[in-house]
Length: 130
Image 1 (cartoon, rainbow, N blue to C red):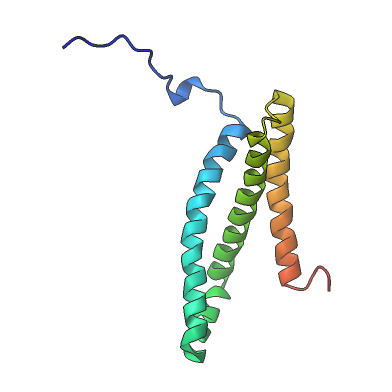
Image 2 (image 1 turned 30 degrees about the vertical axis):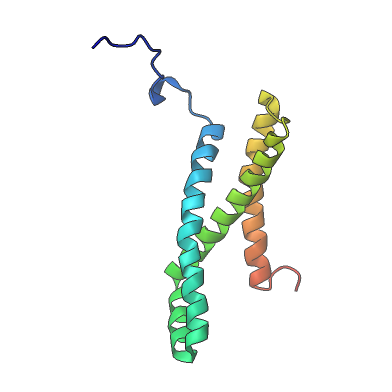
């Protein structure tokens, strides 16, 4: 059987890595993380419905340093996915594909997710809006 003469796709080593590539990969990774985090939400809701003993177990798990770290990561994943999703909605209109605009939107997505995460935790702890 003859081999078709098809163009080969360039390998990842050919591309120059940039923030746009990292954010694309992070968008997919945060989508997976949000799916896993939804299991934590379901655990919490089932514990509430199960009674005080089950809820105390979840509360103790989530108020430790590891639980707070997981919840902080879940919050950041949610905010990054949100910000990047808004950018994709703008892209769906056909706007924002110029290189200078992509660079600005990269920074807005990254810093917007960090700021929104910190604001959410500040509000949650009563540090903001008091």
